[in-house]
Amino acid sequence: MHEPVFRGNEKKYLNECIDSTYVSSVGKFVDQFEIKIAEYTGADKAVVCVNGTNALHLALILAGVKRDDEVITQPLTFIATANAIAYSGAHPVFLDVDRETLGLSPDALSEFLKTSTVLTSTGCYNKITKRRISACVPMHTFGHPCRIDQIVTICNQYNIEVIEDAAESLGSFYKGRHTGIYGNIGVLSFNGNKILTTGGGGMLLFKNEELAKRAKHLTTQAKVPHAWEFRHDEVGYNYRMPNLNAALGLAQLEQLKSFVQIKRRIADEYSNFFSGTEIEFIKEPLDSESNYWLNSILLKDKKERDAFLKFSNEHGVMTRPAWELISRLPMFSNAQRGDVTNSEWIADRLVNLPSSVIPEK
Ligand SMILES: *Cc1c(COP(=O)(O)O)cnc(C)c1O
Image 1 (cartoon, rainbow, N blue to C red):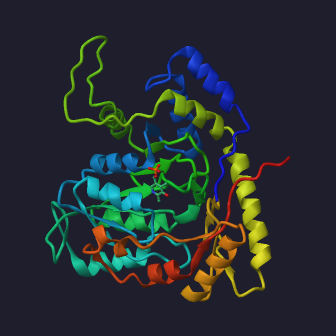
Image 2 (tube, rainbow, N blue to C red; image 1 turned 60 degrees about the vertical axis):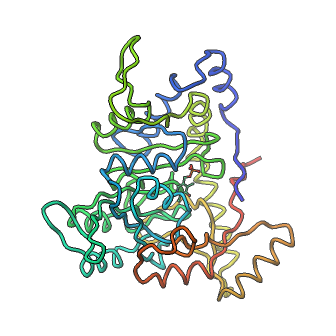
């Protein structure tokens, strides 16, 4: 569904990287990759990570999420979003998505916070569990931006930190600004199937330089910088992306604009193909410009969806359903949730279509 394309300076930079012997976690490609991603997205600072999942984990720690806090997210997302919440010792609360954006619904969020929480001087607390709700992690599903500005406004009113899971939305803009820079921290992924790949990798996006500095510190085992001494001042992590991966990423980033253009052209072709049929092609939401990372359609019901999946896969076209809702998985089945009707409706009907960037010959 997503073949990576290596048609730029990938081999050149990788060779340069090997020749320099700086293949590990320090090197010029790491620095350049961070600078270029910050430039492209409009973040004040960007900090590399080994993958998107641990970038999310670190983002939660940086946002001040503590053991036994609660973190709001959507059930229609890749498992990494919920796993990262579990790593931080917090409990996810699943709220519904919008039918139009496939991302967290500001209406569902606002309704839940109004009816189910109390706001005190130390934060927002869940009335039933008495736990603090410290963060909210909306996700831009398949590259389509959710109504992130409203989500941020609501969370600000309740003293809740917003971490944007923008793992799928590099190259997607909402109201003219890149996704991942609306919240205090944004997270990107460069896994092999994402729009741009470093083999495996992730990135944290920040507005706040102090927070970025702390991210760099925590990803490098919390080592106090010194020419020869090895001293660490808190429990840190080995979450740094190696220079080798950043070299690949930098070469890929140079082609991002053309990748997005090609993706949008493929989306146009699908859109034309399905127009006038009973199958709905999912278009970019209002006020947004999507990278169309993963093209999707909606079938009439689950039965038709399954028939479509069976037919296409048996005929050599790989298609797949949306993720099983996280709230339905055994390890999160006891988690709190709101009314998740839209998420269920979408999960029963949605099919993802092949979306590889096909380069011009
Ligand atoms: C890909 C992805 C991640 C991070 O994945 P990694 O493979 O760890 O880089 C996180 N959230 C979502 C929604 C994703 O699609």
